[in-house]
Length: 418
Image (tube, rainbow, N blue to C red):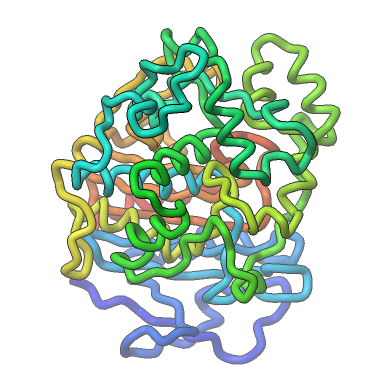
């Protein structure tokens, strides 16, 4: 195995050339808290990442990769705020990237027999059976076939979705969309509440406590946040610019999309009123909304998916059984998603990672988020990759933009040669 090069910042980095490898001096030994790690086999990937963040208006981000359970890349660059550089411990609001973490909680519980994928949700959450939902299964929720994609108007007021109890109560009595029987309809925002409440009903514990027990503690990485402690919030990068689908402001875009048949589902699922302002409200970090308000480092995400990509064990710690990973990776629903309007191949809680190539790996699972962040495990190569950023990409594209897709394709190519 090739020994990784460790890089430590030396001196003040000049504006206009942020975080490029040539601005760091190599230093052998174990990685210290301020050091970056670049395995020589992944230098091209590091170069591609650093090229994204050369000027302050490009923001900042972090990229981490594991190969066969070994960390081979851990780098960061750019600005977490106009007056602050991205640091090793900077975190980012990562939107739908958090769905993958929430789904992994379910699989940890299912492995121990606490949850049956094919049992009705109402078996664990009796109120959920209202209005024709008694036969909707856990697997239906995980594959976006519950018919509960609508968040727009689900609860009153711009800040209504910050009220966890009111929101899950509204979902429990909601009538499912009839199109669910024919295929998936992406639950862009509601997915997180459905999973969180299921987990709480099964365990009798608050969802954030279960995340700490089932994900953060066994992996030895604390940065899996849905409710962020006040003393950790200074580490969260500032998001910019505004979400502007169609190049319009949020309200105008939502109004247009709601009137058009092909895009009505997307507006219902992903565009609650005032969402563009809400994402910058500190109050989002007081609530539990795992469909979109997860805050992570690339390091934490890559370690979770690194355990999955390595067959379930990392650094001698068994995180998941190989049989569970087989269940997670199997495509359950393959259809044209009636919300996204494109064909999707849904696993139990994950989608097929998006690569900037015609040929995509079949044995891969993960979740990307609006704005660009995302993470995945490639079971074929043993690679995991996680990318977080504060520079929102192509407007309100639900599953990110081409930055991670390009990085992912390069990473996969390098992993196959390693």
